[in-house]
Image (cartoon, rainbow, N blue to C red; front, side, top):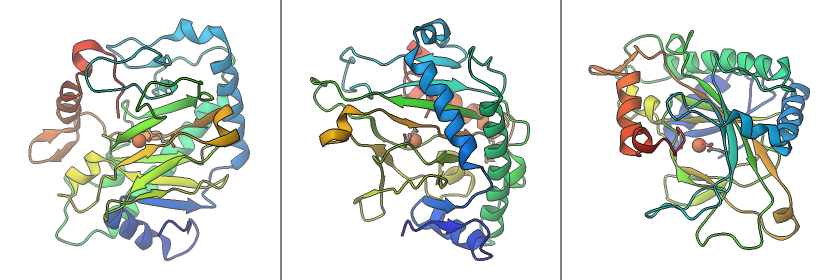
Length: 283
Ligand SMILES: O=C(O)CCC(=O)C(=O)O
Ligand SMILES: [Fe+2]
């Protein structure tokens, strides 16, 4: 099911649409993104997460841009915080010192690839599915799209009960492009409710549909539930890095009916309490 679809294979546009319909997930092999670029970006951010300067970039709740520290404390209520720290980079976010142009290049290249994939997704949707504007264009010039650079540190000896690297969730946005992470751990909940491990060969890109695509397609495309599980054995002493690009439409784009992308996002953020206390991240 999750065999990589080859970017250049003429069957791939249709197969990608089918995967996003059936499972909400696909893996793209040999995409037009240089693996060296991905590795260079991982290197830069590994250095950032190691240095104490990261604390000078702590996010502002209003903007949701910047560094989100690892949350050691036991969270209130039912939620246990994920075992991760991360940085949210929007097109307008200032890069921390030491982060080079590679990160901007990767952002731009992934964004361009996403436009192409969205054209395929629209082209191979059934005629009964109509979008309010061409899907590929919804993300043009969007200031809401963000690259989330994530560091999952080695597991501590005592982790809070139930805490995992990333708890089961769906992404809010249209689609997500995820260059292969540095280690395994990503799992997808398939339509039969089984957790399936998502492969991550270096160079591949994992694609998943989000809630906005599900809504804009009247439910045709699935927003798949996924999570990142904790490693076992020697791997638990190692870090894992990943960097999903969450593609968001421009804020005024109408997703369905009269709901704009902005209104939908605010609704979702209010639901998860983000607007109230600014602690929870955006996906
Ligand atoms: O780290 C990963 O592989 C996935 C992360 C993820 O799903 C998210 O941040 O929304
Ligand atoms: Fe996610």
